[in-house]
Length: 237
Length: 215
Image 1 (cartoon, rainbow over the protein chains, first blue to last red):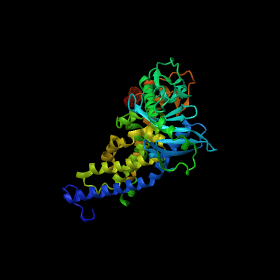
Image 2: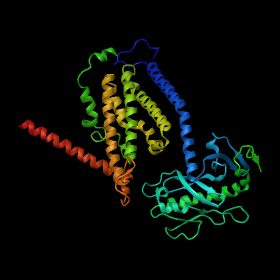
Image 3: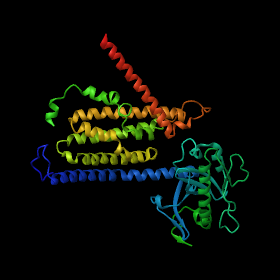
Image 4: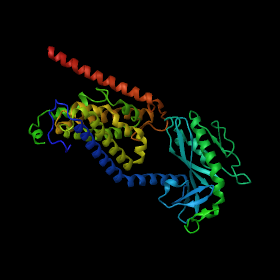
């Protein structure tokens, strides 16, 4: 706008230059403010996400007081820095005496409306899944979201059996959902009336993730038992 | 703007009340119904959405009113949209930084404030023609009216659909939640009931006025 000192009368058509200049100035100011706010809030937003995940980890691993982030792949186990929460796929939880409580891992599967993403806790001592919380879900309120609230469904996760076969390559028994009230084995999940698809999705997510991650995890268990950084540096096995 | 300050005329109280009641954006003008239906499943979500929209409305209409003589009318809509979008982005980041839980609950609807026709409507019909102070007062009134409307819908839906109010259980453990009220149809049902009520009140007032006139 600085190029135009004289403002044309309202009735006359302003020059294209003025129109373009107006939009350019407004767009530039807009960009400036957006970047300003982005930079001002970025740190806090990252912190929020980290806190959220941290609370989730401690919730699925009762008794844990601190955690260590790991990236576990076929190639091996890598210990990540505390702030690299986003890159980690295994969170090991330890109590105040540095005793291993268990591992929290993410799992996801397609539900009724969208992907259901959960974080579940795995106790290697008892070889079971000891709880989960939903990280992301757009399931039908009042029906599909019962996976978070239904006490009978949540009781499935007091100790859901995920022991491995003798070779240690996969689960001995796949996690499956059964009709509500018909659970007879420790690896079965009692479904929820009205939320069949969502309950099945949780089972599928856990089954796939457990089959993939637990055999890998147990190969590195010794190294994971000790949270001190010296023993769990980058190692490839 | 000294020439605006000179004529600080009396319509200010009316300008404020206009948006809350006489021209309530949701109940009377039926504007911004998308967020009014979509994120009004709990009182808290509705309140947060209403306040977020109010901040965007107030910020953008104020700025538009300040710049109204500088923006050529041929590019005004484009300019308004950029200004509104900027405020929406600012609100979006701010909510994200304040509370992740609230941010997740409101979801894409924070970003969709940008297409709330109440805001562009106010910018075009009011802010571009009125003094800054009147615009600010009018926007506060409209924002309050919008927030009130969302809150009224949200509160009823939460009470019937969850049996809670602001998360506090109201009816004890035996309450069977009326799930339809949390689902989209519940939004339509509750909103339409409020519309009926408001229309009835308005009609009654008009009739009374007519009677008074005749007498």
